[in-house]
Image 1 (spheres, rainbow, N blue to C red):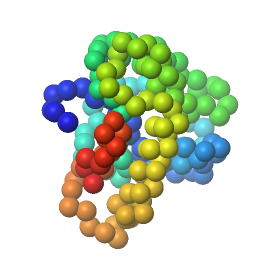
Image 2: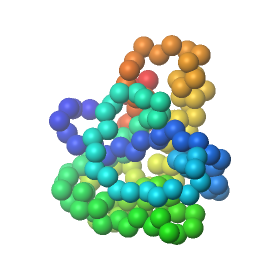
Image 3: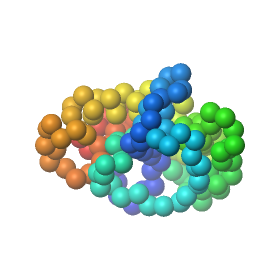
Length: 155
């Protein structure tokens, strides 16, 4: 992936708690304190592997960055809705970006495909002992999968 080009990623982060969603997609998303407020933030997330950042999955090439920000900023945060969480926000964001048709270039953003790929990739890294210290990894960067090309770019 050429540097300097904007790409859209999702990041799976470690959180405590038991999954409550039917497909268990909240396995790594649900905060351990039960109901917690979610907020929208625009922050740079370093590529460095941390205890919280498990894996990243690259979904799309961004053609219009400002338009993407406008779309993402418009997605409501529904903290008062029972059962709503950040997974719901990501799903809605992908639908809105897909429906827009002008923001993204080459992309794989169909929800079931993204969810399954991200969960499978995270499970694969778990099975490879990426997070538990059993195997020493020679990288300080977060494991990253390119969904467009169907390949791992950072093990």
